[in-house]
Amino acid sequence: DGDYDIRYSINDGTSWNSVKISDCGATYCWDAHMVIDDNDELHVAYTTYTQYAETLVYMHYDGTTWTSEEVSSNAHFGPIGIAVDSDNHPHISYGIRGQYCGDGLRLASYDGSSWSHQDIDIGSNRGCESAIVIDESDYIYIAYQDRNESKLKVVTNKSGSWDRYTADMGS
Image 1: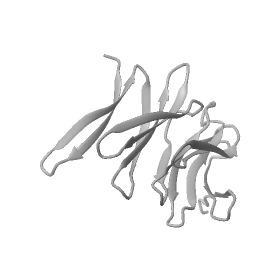
Image 2: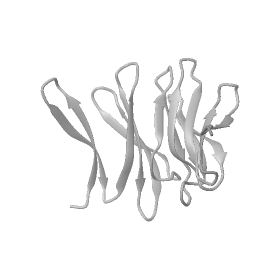
Image 3: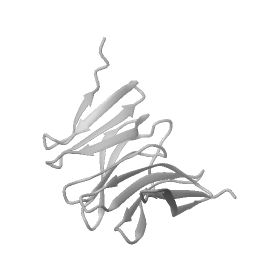
Image 4: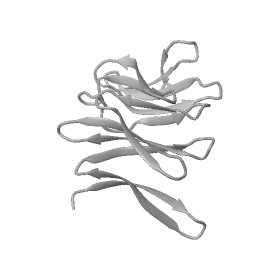
């Protein structure tokens, strides 16, 4: 029928049960990523794409109800990363809307009441296909592509500011 869904599946010990949690309508929902926090609540992030807009969407399941909100209307569709900090607040790494791989790497962080956005590495053809982890001290590490340089890059805020590293491919 031309409509697309995001589904949540769980195994009850004998079989898998699948439930639709989001109706993407006639748009594509790209690369949903999910994490489980310390309270066993689910956090999902994905991007959508139409010829008119590319958005970043966040969903949360508190054990009873799914909620959904648009985090950014300026996201590059494709793989993103999501992680939760020690307060169970989500952080999402994503590319900024632009050609090819996007116009840079951005981080969306939720503090319990609102979202903030940080530009981490701005430039053409970089920021896509990111992955994010947060360590026990709440330092953030993000791996992402810089296709202009054909390199995998890693950034971290462990020093108090964003430090960038290029993954060494060896000789």
